[in-house]
Amino acid sequence: MPGGSIMSVSRRFVTPSLSLAPSRTASLLMALDSLNLQAGEILGTEQVGRLLTLADAKEEVEIAEPKMNSIERINPASRLEVLAQIPHPRTSSKPRTRKTTSRPQAKKTTSRSQVKKITSKPQVKKTSEESRIMPTGSTSKPAEVQKAVPIISIEAEQDQPVKDPLPFYSCKDYEPKPSIIYIKNEEETNEMINGLFTGPVAMDLEWRVTFYRTAERNTKSEGKAAVVQIADGAGLILIIQVNGMRRFPERLQALIENPKIAKVGVNILNDGKKLFRDYGIMAKNLVELGSVALVVDPKPIAKRKIVSLAKLVERYCGKILDKGPVRISDWEKPLSVSQREYAANDVHSSLMVYNELLKLGELYSCTLEDVSAQYTSEVGWSIGSGILSTGSQSTQTQEGMQPRYLRAYESWHQRGLSLEEMCLKLSLKSQGSYGPIVEGDDLALKPGTVISYIIAALQNDSGLEYKLDKLVELVQMDLDSWSRHREWIVQQC
Image (cartoon, rainbow, N blue to C red; front, side, top):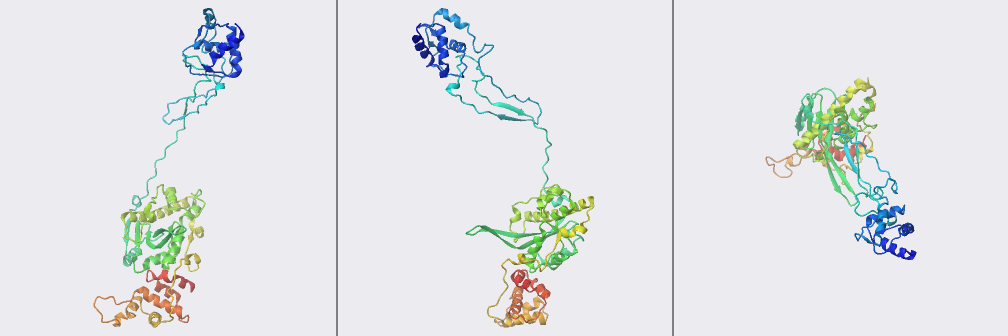
């Protein structure tokens, strides 16, 4: 048959059925030419696959979905026997296919601790020149033309012990069983302080924090220390709400200022400074728990002096200290049950951490008394400007010395009257200056008013004599007077 006719027939054969690399077209035509095909015969798709194998089509091809069940070809019956003898790609012992490597799958085990992870390789779309012809009806595909399938990899993970969750901290779980006492008046506070067990105590403070937004940024303001918590070694926990009292309790102040009694806590020096800012209390022998841990623990939780109480409780008590939203609640109102529980757990856990640290000190033969300077501190007059920069302003008179100021100063310094006596005698109302006295009327001046008169007299006449410690004692008799006059008083030191 003339070559031109064969070329024409071959193109009609190839084009509608499959996509073939151009470089292999000549090989296919040569194979067709060698079979001496003639017009008028039908060549099935299976025979086409064998024909391509015979043509040694080494380039990758992809079968195109035939739109016809057969290809119109002309072939004598005698030539079909020749085609039948051509090795089929599926049964060939040496298929002309590209070798591929498959990822070995990990062995499956029956351990319950194994975790199955299914990962899949993205399918790579082959171009027309990379495709290989596939006989229609075949149930298998060469390895290189099979679609990528997910590879299931079963990775055996080593069994690791699962730790039980830590319990929440509660002071009620400890012995001796704690007695939690909520106090709101000065007299009861003084009585309960006198009944504390001798030895170190834990101390903590709570105050109200108000958040607000300015034109530039979000900020917050702190109220005065509203609650003071004290816990001793005998299980007594005092929750003292001082913001509603007439003055800061005297016995509580004496305890905080006693240099022989250790007060333990976290960031406790900051609490001591706040007590000075708010009430003029000069705390002594403040023990920072994080600093103690650095001394007695060979592997402390952190290489810094101040560590959160929650982390210390978890490390040394093996429990979780709940620090929920109650910690920023309003501590100036009557305390709820949840607030009292929070306050009790906070101060009690500080004492328990301290006890555990003492045990470590004994274990490693560490005497705390020898290194007390590393973890104790105190608050005094020379604490620095950081305490004073709160914007407090003492009462300053623009009109100069007034008679009522001098009367108040003389009653205090020269006559030695008590604050209560001065409040009554200095009141013009009590003398009938504002009309007849009616039974039940409050005739006395407010304590803060009398204190302001005395301070105003000292400010207007620098020659007036007074003792600073007596003045501080007077100012601390009124809960709000110290913060009002603190800055001026400290400047006199």
